[in-house]
Length: 136
Image 1 (cartoon, one colour):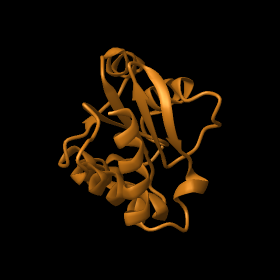
Image 2 (cartoon, one colour):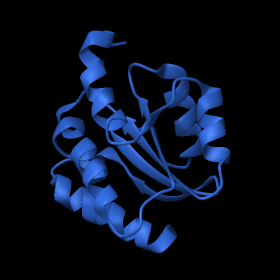
Image 3 (cartoon, one colour):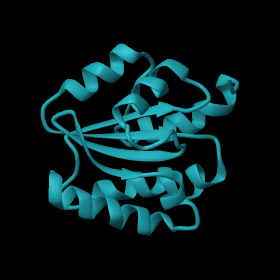
Image 4 (cartoon, one colour):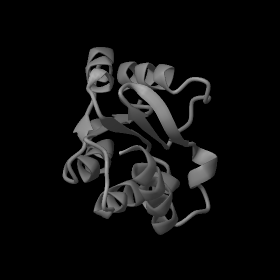
C-alpha cells in the first residue's frame, strides 16, 4: 500500500477531470450496474500511468462520444475496489494501469498495461475514442 500523500495528486488528476473514485466493492457494483457506458481507469503509481494512461484517458473525453460514467480505482491503494473491478474484467489478468469500457455492465473494450506501455497519451486517447465511437 502506498501512502495517501503520495497517491492523492494521482487520484485527484482523474477526479478533477470528472472521474468518480470507487473505494469499496459496493461502489464498483453500483457503478457497473448503471445503464449506459462506464469507463473504469485502474490507476497506478507507475510512470506509464502518469505519462500516458491518465493523460490519455482524460484526453479521450474530448471525443464526439464518450462514456456516461467515468470511474477510477487505484491499484496498490484501494485493494477492495480494485479487486472487485478486476473481477468484472475477467478473462483479462490483473493489470495496472488498465482502462476498461463497460456497456450496461458488460466489458466491451480493454486496454491492458502492455497496450499502454510505450504508447503516447494521444495514441491511448485515439484508441479509447474509437471504442467510444462504437459503444457509446
